[in-house]
Structure formats: structure tokens, C-alpha cells
Length: 138
Image (cartoon, rainbow, N blue to C red; front, side, top):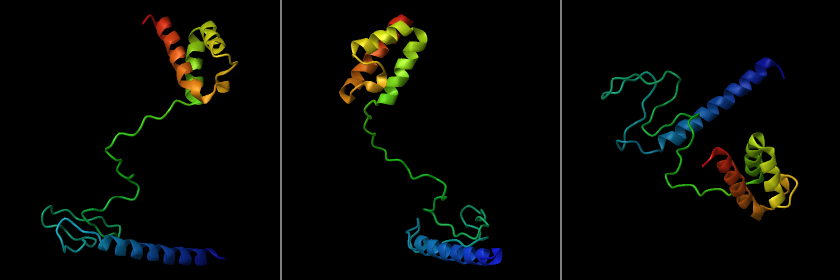
């Protein structure tokens, strides 16, 4: 396949995608019912601004493609601590005082934090944080 053929095929595909996007956006309701989408280069009566010159139609509800979906307003449930978090906490303690880190590992009868069982992780993190608080004088 030559470069010219590849460009021709890509151009045709892009035109089909643009047509499909225009069709999908045309069916969306705008702020003023029955209002036609603005064409490139037209000015709006209320703002006097010129639309983008990228060949795209502008609607009130349009969102740029690279903008992420809006996040829901309801709070997300807190995720349970995992082994990676336990390892990070233990490393923070070991950097400050290694003997306390080893003592916490011995308390849970493991040689390293990755050997913890799932039901031990939250208790382990609490014990490590308690040792860190003692070191900081809290």
C-alpha cells in the first residue's frame, strides 16, 4: 500500500466519523428547543463570538473530546487498604527506626509485609501508624 492510498483511506474514514458525529450531535437537545447548531464562522447574536474554525458544529451541550466525563457527586466508598499500602507504611517506619519495624512484623508473625493475610492488613497498618506516632511524640 502506498502512502497516497493510506492517506486517501484515512481521509475517507475521518469524513465518515465526522458525519457520524454531526448526526449524533444534531439529535441532542439544545438550550433553545429547535435551534440549529451553529456552522463554522457564524457569530452568535447574544455573545458575538465566532465559532471555532475546525469544521465542527457547535451546540450548547457539546464537550471537547479530550475532557473527561463529569464525576458523580455522590461520595465514593473508601477502598480497603492493600498490601502495597502496608508495605509503604512499613518502609516509612523502617526509615525512621528499623527495630520498631521489625517488632511490628514479629507481632504479626511475618517476615515481610507482603506475607500478611488480607484480614491482617488494616490492623498491621494501624500498628505501624501507632509506632510512627510514638516516634513523632504524638
